Length: 198
Ligand code: URA
Image (tube, rainbow, N blue to C red):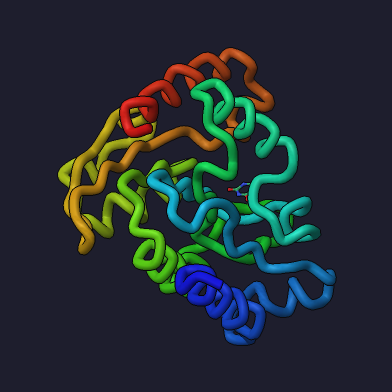
């Protein structure tokens, strides 16, 4: 087993036993799994969503419901498969009723995302939705960190990570197209920006 896989498994084991999380009891009561991440441990592109929904919490896999099917379509539109990238979320357990993750939840799970970043060391972080966008832009103190997603989506923000140059691409959350078909083309256009990194 590669060193990266071992380190990612250690994260999984720690999250499984994260009794101090405000979402731990809800997970156990419902027989849910935490969702750590999935994909290539040597990926150049890492996608970061918000938090698992019900399908994800039932299977332990990120983006496996309706949003995930659209995400697969978006990946396919630029000839990418899930195995080519790494997909995770900031918050690793499902918040009740699919509500937005709270500040406290983000604070509890962010150290695990930080470790995933250090292990995978991507060249590109594609954020899915405004919570992960804000977290990553703040983390790297990007000049654009106070801009709304409506302005930043589909643009490349360049910063320096511990391991070298890093491009941040803010994308809308795929769920935003599910009930708003006119949004679909915006997602497809935004994904084109990732092609330059492949
Ligand atoms: N939405 C997310 O942000 N992440 C998932 O894993 C599924 C839906």
